[in-house]
Amino acid sequence: MARPDAVWASPKEPSLDESIRVGLDAILASHVAKDGIPQEVLLGSTFVVLGKQGNDPYSSGSHRTSRAETRSGILYSGSAGRSTFEANSPSYSTDTVTWIASMTKLITVTALFQLVEKGLVSIDEDVRPHLPRVAAMQLLKGFSDDGTPLLEDNTTPITAQQVEPRPENPLGNPGLS
Image (cartoon, rainbow, N blue to C red; front, side, top):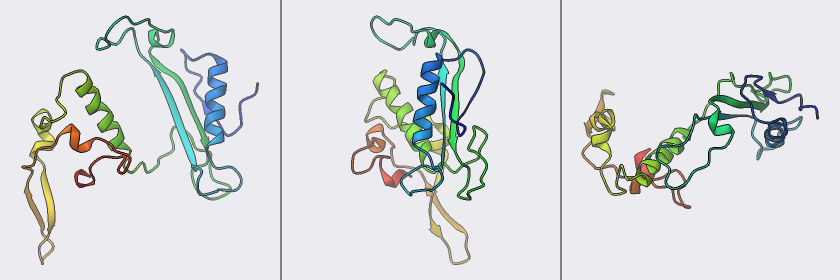
């Protein structure tokens, strides 16, 4: 089966089975802008699957290692769509520079809750001692009349419970943005 023109995938080995790659390509192509650009569709997107070497040392119980888990490196890298709104826009690729906005919050919250699951951090524990750079940051409270930033020390604990995503606020506490 031929791959859609709008999708690019890395030829790097090791890779996933062809049927899986074709399926991932189709998912990418179905969720990005085509000729007309409806608002509910992404302009462009990239998806990368990384392999890991061996078992996860933090997993509990019996764990069978899949073929993908025994390989390391990029198993799949695909992109689809276009990089700008113009009809003659270059195709979206893994090298396309894009604005990701609050996506780092999602990654940070995921990593934090993995630490909670592993028992390395409590859900109510102040995480600032584990993150010295965050603990040392001052908070911007406004600006003086001459434009000088008004800063104050970061004295309020930051806990996993505060940043936990909820249906009404999927990215966690807005006060911690």
